[in-house]
Image (cartoon, rainbow, N blue to C red; front, side, top):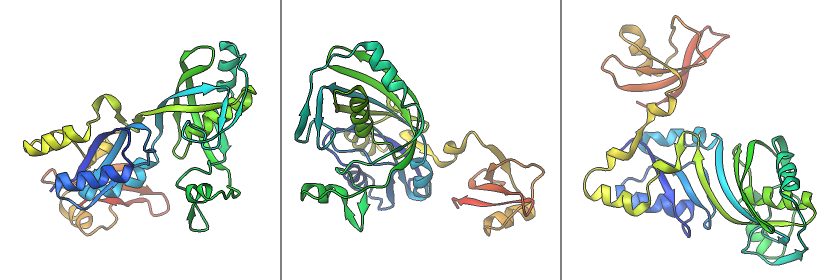
Length: 290
């Protein structure tokens, strides 16, 4: 039984759920979940949790992301990418310095209005389904944070940028908003997620590579253990009464006040992540992996 995370390279044409379904077929394990939707046309890093590691899905989804996006200036579409209908075209007369000043203005916390062509639901219905039916509804702005944007390449009518951002940031919408700020419009023409939390694209595996490793019985070689996700937190080993309390999912007392600790049993097996409760002056279960 596999319990861990596989860093999948999602290829173009697959939905995130397609990847999960494919991995279920490869591993013969049903308990699998992904950690952040990528559009079918986008490629790149998609960490997938298997077995008890599915308890980490929400935590990994919350991690910061890095993207490389291609954008075309002078065009606005209803989908904010090239799959939609062109609704405006303008001449582009923007210098590299003007473009740099525009993108830098998006660094920091802000509110972003999700696009109509997205999987978000309003009133129980997906926005994209309503958009295809010609219906536009009001969307509440969402809090996002862009920690960094860099220009990788630029010419007269196109640019390639690298974006580090919080979860829930729509890069399509960012490209659209940059175009609006420049006054010429812009659309996203390509998107690669290069990092999700600690999972990077240079150590991501395509589905056919994963399938081949599974056939060889070598799948464990690319599985990240659950405790590695918490490697930045202090590790403690419990024994005696504290070990019994951990096995029962009860609070424990330790001679420290770290925010989180990785808890191992006396035999070396990873048991849980505990968090410090200031009010109780003890550690309480945060995530159990027994």
